[in-house]
Image (cartoon, rainbow, N blue to C red):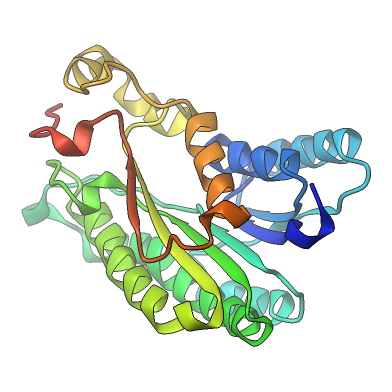
Length: 253
């Protein structure tokens, strides 16, 4: 990878699962990567060691931060805005399952803080630098629940839909500065996040046109593409990676 397209990328929620797959894919593409984690300290340490061993000419760092903590996010922003990141992948997310009429506002607000407000705070700081440099790539990991209703996901879907509206507006506001902003909307991914639904898996997969969950690497490679020179004219896009699920009626647990 040439120095002209090598980026310094920040990935939130990169300690495990999809986030770790994204970090690995970006590293394999030649980028320097800093990633955040909340509780996955052992996984983050192991990932960092793997990256440093496999890519000795690149720079990697792991930072512990609880994106649900507004004060912690503010402190984190003061740190990272002094660094010249030209790529930002907001992967961190917090789920909360509840029927719409039973939704607990406190738990819903916690999900909104992690999924939406932490992005606006961090993304606002990083994109200002990108605009001055007239170069930058922002990728947000959203969800197809922002596009299609799924019972029990009211709060989570609302946070991801808010993220979608914000991302598309941000994209058109900063496109002329050479910064792209895109929304990736995965369906069901084969990670630990799906463990609570293990007993429903066969039924769920039967309703996905592709008849399977996505592999984390499939999403990660697409995210990496959005940071590549070939994706320079893609911005404000909503990109489902769901095996055809958002084109279908939906899935019922």
